[in-house]
Image 1 (cartoon, rainbow, N blue to C red):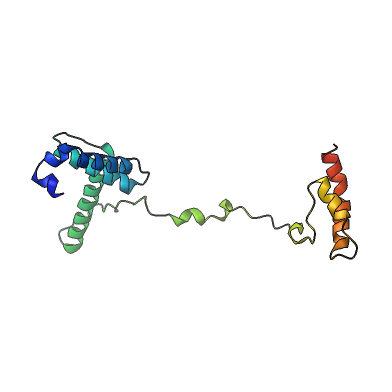
Image 2 (image 1 turned 90 degrees about the horizontal axis):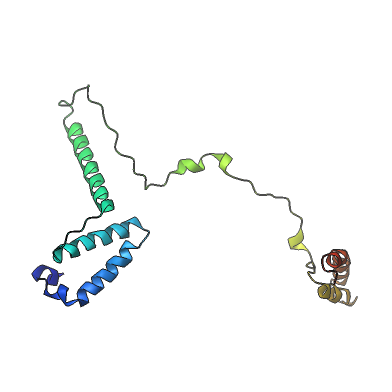
Length: 170
């Protein structure tokens, strides 16, 4: 920053300018308004150092809004501190609403919420998962009777076999 204040030589050398332009470009490409506005301010300052004029509409609108808010708050403070000076004829202007705040009123309406289907087919607690292929059915049928859950494996294979044969005839 000292180099910017003392003269234009370091800027015209190119290295510092390249770094500033790269950083400013990244900020201008950002989707976050705070970063984008910051990049606009840096770009305007850099352009002024290079002897050029640069203006961003978005930055000017933001500055105008900020000045308007400051004027409104100053008027309100003056009216509150001197209630005798204000007349009853003046309309009070409500402070501007900040759109950046989250509005919870959207979630107050229950009609927006869609209930889950709580109908459970108990598929997730089956002892033996359903076979997807004929080869898996064959493996389930070859399970020996002495093995654990043999009855469940045989039953599942026999139940799913007709559906698998219909869906994959060859």
